[in-house]
Image (cartoon, rainbow over all chains, first blue to last red; front, side, top):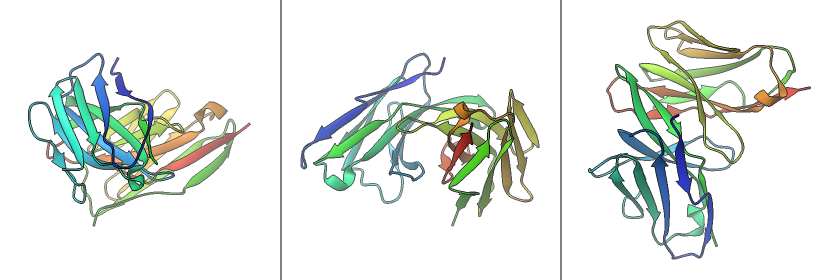
Length: 118
Length: 113
């Protein structure tokens, strides 16, 4: 159980175009979904937190107009990188959260999407 | 500012031995701590969660300790196998119900046959 999928697994796009990445929780309903970015040999950096039906909460330094997040349902969140530039090339990972007990949560991660902007 | 450090960027261990990874944090009061495994080009996979009032957690060959006085967690893999080779990440969560995790820098573990 607790499977999260991402689509596409990799994408190459030209500078200035937009790219949409989908994140789905396949066998559970996620209270919250998260979007992370990971550069080579670095840890995961949280970009934004997404709750179904409400606006995403972005971390400091992340441009909300550039990284559009739409959380359409309890099982689907999308990240759109608008007007992509080469410096946006990275590994984008989503996760879906389910509450275990009290205030502790387990996050289940998608396989990631490798974005390359040329 | 909050800081989470994992003991070393890379760790090589002989097969069969116990691998011990360290996660230290400063300027943080986590309610719980999690350990994840990440293989190259893949998303992290959840391994263990330990709460602030717990000292130790075990799961098969894995053991996690949590010392809130030392602000440190130790992650042990006993009877290590080459298949255990991966990057291991610790992550801290707060007790404010916002579910956010802050990840450590990761340790790349290699089990040598």
